[in-house]
Image 1 (cartoon, one colour):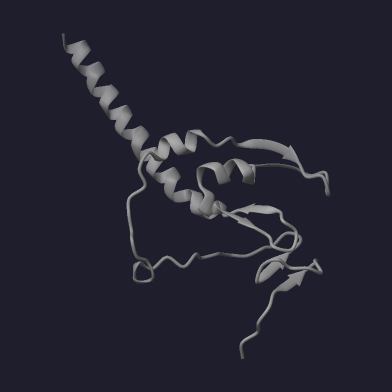
Image 2 (cartoon, rainbow, N blue to C red):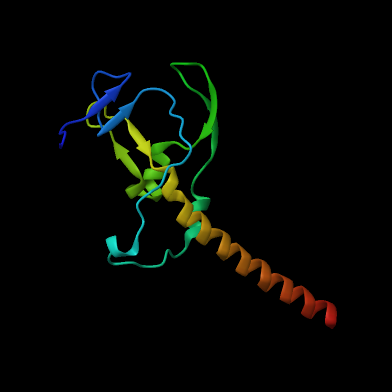
Length: 128
């Protein structure tokens, strides 16, 4: 049986297939990622420069007053527009945080390459 439309929990106007207003607990969450489902696969270049444009922030949610950490969707959108979705019902923007893992991995690899190069330079300087 196929159900069409959006389902909301804690909201009367869901903007996504499943829209939950509140916390969700789970023992695991898996993103579909099989290579057979993908095309036009390319490496991520200049990941470190892109990541450096993002700003992690501390903030307080207006509705609950709860302190939190995260990113501002509008900032992410300028760097990684594909990771930001707009809720058609509310116009509010959301970040697909899980997909930031790929550029973060590539940024770490770029940094590691820089570290190795600097270590080699230091060795050469010490050897002279």
